[in-house]
Image (cartoon, rainbow, N blue to C red):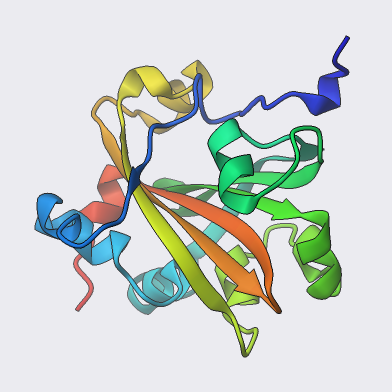
Length: 194
């Protein structure tokens, strides 16, 4: 019998999103307003701050040790029953939802980061990981999540009524990987910065 903390349950999703590997030409299949966000090379938090100043805030929806989704485990080469810290948050400005995010942080990555990643609280992840001098971006995938893929709570609270584009990125800190998935809500896609 599986104990509750071994589930792959998500507060964001009814089912795991289907991801498309980022290959040459993928970018040009996306709408231009999505490309700008999905292929942002720096911190999305910093990009939002350049527009909204300090009005950017993080609402922690869920943070717990559990097993990641199957494709997340495969991407990070994690055994089936190995715990990772799974953090799901909303980045917003004055309550206006901008980005939903899901982060998978294996215990070994937390250890090399000197546990900063386990105690983020309401701090944006981007502010922490982009401060590491040798942060490496390993891989990226793209997805389009239809409303049926989201949990009822997310649909109700954030008014999702159309497909939502997202990206997931494997980052490495001192050769230890983590996975950050970010989903661009309509209010952020309408934000023109640059």
